[in-house]
Amino acid sequence: MDVSFFAEIIPKLLAGLPLTLQLAGFSILYGAILAFLLALARRLEMPVIDWPIRSFVALFRGTPLLVQIFLIYYGLGQFRPSLQALGLWGLFREPYWCAILALTLNTAAYGSEIIRGGLGSVPKGQVEAAQAAGMSPFLVLRRIIMPVALRQALPAYGNEIILMVKGTSLASIITLMEITGIAHGIISQTYRAIEVFACAGAIYLALNFLITRILGLIEYRLSAHLRPAAA
Image 1 (cartoon, rainbow, N blue to C red):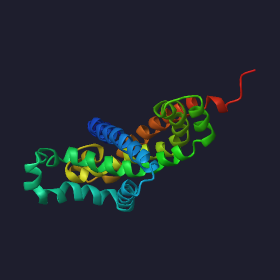
Image 2: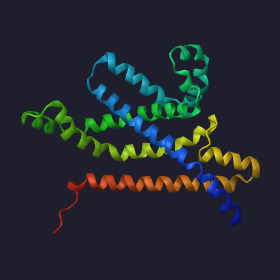
Image 3: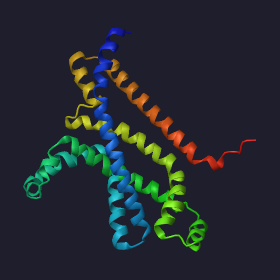
Image 4: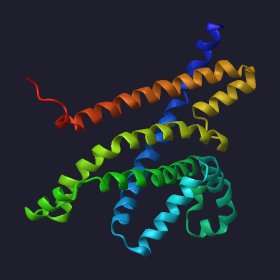
């Protein structure tokens, strides 16, 4: 084992960590907002709204994330005149924003189903009791539905967050130099793929371990009523 080689490449790989965190953070944030809106829209049970959302979810859940990134980054370039007319070409010509858009839409599709399941798990009796107490629909959503739905959806949504962190590695195929992109560059210079990818994998592992612990702490705080009372 060449310890000096590991000591040399780890700082180089860590230089891509901020970009990895940006891609994951923005896509998870925007995706969660979009997923919540889509899940709420599905609860209206209106065919004119429900079927387009179903189609969106089926499309992004049924196709590989890699293909989605290619379609957005390379495919939208065919519509450059239209995008320029709309003032959007400056956005879609940047691989950074194309990657965030692809990751956001992908996680929104998965997240909307997770959140919809969480919303559906709220006992109707609690909602009816809150309405009988005179709560407004918004207050019922904020005080009754959302806390229960969040607690139910968090374990599955935590898995989706981890998948998104790992999914950022695909951004390297559109020239973004995050951890995996830097790893490819080092391998092209050193031809030592095993050592480089082992270090990159260790960084992802440490990052996801930290995220898992944070999610576990949040789940613990939200489940205080399930723990036995102190003597």
